[in-house]
Image (cartoon, rainbow, N blue to C red; front, side, top):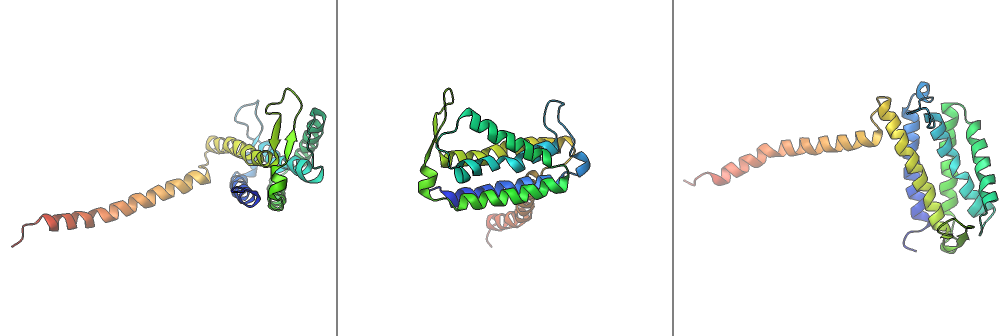
Length: 198
């Protein structure tokens, strides 16, 4: 397999590191912030992300489900919601992000190509009605990136420049400085080439 367990696990670790940095950079007194009254607070978003991978490990590891019925999904989501509600403080949330993220990445790392290729089925009207375990596990990363984007908007509303934006700005500033430093030297060379020979 060209893209398999090792690649997905490493990619997920990168995504989780970025989520953890956001969790650490937002002050705890801002964890109750909501962009609008209808959406999750910062704490709720982070707790959701911290616990959301649990059901994937249950489906693909502990229970090894090949069919997921609506009742199954309801039970899994009920447990995830209960886990989220247990996380009350910033320290608990950050710790859960680290521990649960590490467990999930290690779990993915331990899967073989045959396991990743196994098909899981869903009842109507779910479409597609079948997905590979690899595709389902990849959705965990996509899910986290979706919630992380919401957290980055929250950071902006709180007056925090997200770390990925700061990194990009620093790189652009370094390139601009390097270009400015090389411009006089280049201009001097060009002037020397253009000067008449005696």
